[in-house]
Every structure is written in structure tokens, then in C-alpha cells.
Length: 145
Image (cartoon, rainbow, N blue to C red):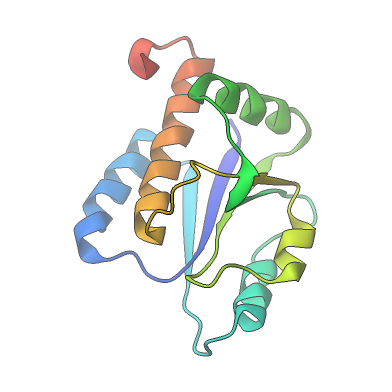
């Protein structure tokens, strides 16, 4: 099974931490979350922090409102195809002001949950749940229905 990594600007508020821990446990602890705290209010600085956590061998998916949208089934298929060529799939959730051009340029793919705007902490929870759902779809488990 692939290793999933989520790189996010900002700390998850305490009211979301239990949900996050529960979903990570459901993912058999095969998912890491790197919370990056920027001491500067700069997307360039945040971009440097993000890129420092990504290997050249990682398949990087940036979450952005302008990205592609998938059904859960198509997302599962997409992750399955990516996992054939990459051992690590890395998701990036930028800060409140977006991400730098360098981060966008590094992305192998850009994903959007919706044209709606969601709080970053909720996007992280939604992402964890969709990763879990994708795994269950791949395994033929009925969870996703």
C-alpha cells in the first residue's frame, strides 16, 4: 500500500483533531500529516516550507479551487493509477492566501473538491475521508456507497 502524506499550512484546531486521528487510524496509520507553521505572512515563504517536505520521487497533488474535480470512484481510480508509478502520494493544502507559483509548478496534479470555498481545516478532514473512501473502493468494500 502506498504512503499518503498531507502537507498543510497551519495547525488543525483541537475540535478537528479527534476526527483527523480517527481517520488516520482507519487508514492503518499509513498517512502522515505535516503541519507547517509559517512565521512570516508570505506565500513564498510558505512555498519554501512546503517544497522542503516533498521529494522528487513524490507524486504531488495540490488542493486548489481551480483544480480538476472527480467523483469518489474516479478519484479512487486516479490514486490507483498514480500509485503504480509512485510509492508516495503527497497532498498539499496551502494557507489562506493560496500557494506560491513554485508550489503550483511542482504539482503533478491539481485537485478541487468543489467550486465552493472550504476552511482549510475542513478540507484536510474531507481529504482524509476521501483517501479512506478511495482505498475501500479499491478493496471492493461497500463503505463508499
